[in-house]
Length: 191
Image (cartoon, rainbow, N blue to C red):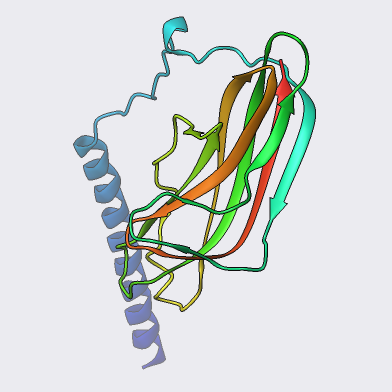
């Protein structure tokens, strides 16, 4: 009886191995026929498509405005100044400076909705918004999901002639809200 059981187990094992071999062979053969070879991507950049080369700049001034302790209400779809008007200097008697604004703002929407309240941060220099003003930094869709404030960070830049200028950060929210904490750095560079 034991020999019949051994022969039976050996037959089942051989049959299982043969079946597995045929299955794997069929998969390799089938997958090889149905797929066409994929060519690797090419990245052909033409000189006209490339951005201009970086220009070395020297930091000549840093101005930092931080939270004042008073929340600022931002009305519906209205550009609202957040930090105090700050006077900066582009030194020299000629040439220009690059002003880079690093902006971090914590806001809370006034409407209880998901994904309906975009926020944008803008740099105003001498009362004029920079060219990237109005590009929304984010959508406060998670603010009401997990009951937390929404934090947005961005960086804006503009070139100014030598002399004295004013800078200020404005915030706009589609459906309004409040800013609680903010930290704005105005960096002045000479090329």
